[in-house]
Image (cartoon, rainbow, N blue to C red; front, side, top):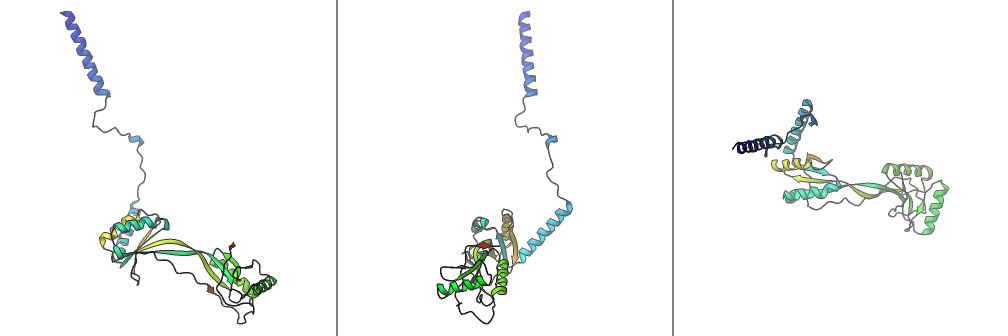
Length: 259
């Protein structure tokens, strides 16, 4: 009997010890993990004055957009398809239009096409005698004086030509070349408060985008991308006496790019 009581006490002690071990070492289910407060960091704190200024600017922007007849939303060319898809979800129909704004990255300086190769050769010879370098006869017998990366550089060359050989460069032109899309602008007519809110939120997803209220353009919007018109040469004033070797014709360009 005494042995039975001893064994019973041993079992009871082992069970109690196991209960104590499990309740003190095993985390309770459903309880949140303990947070290490020392590892927590404050990422940023907005200065009250800055926050007030930003809130004021946001309020003014909303007021401007609400009173505007049209909204303009400009994005980088690479973001244009994503912006167009976002506007398509809004189902705005003909109220929204887009236009690619282009800029030219090359400017050709040239003289008109000559009647034949002999006249072109004679003109080039006279230009070289006047110390005009980098002259090239093109396949259509026009005379190229260079291709430049900026209009200012092209204008400097024109001024130099006029100093060296004013009579020979009668009809000289600067023609913009190689158009590149600078940005894509979406124009939204008659925006309501809901649309303004959606576009304002959408702007946060487009880096370097610009949203502003503007007067509506006179022409009706279109869903097609508007392309810029073909560039026209810039005709520069020249002396009244033309050379006999030059005849008016469209300009040409050369592959040599100068700065």
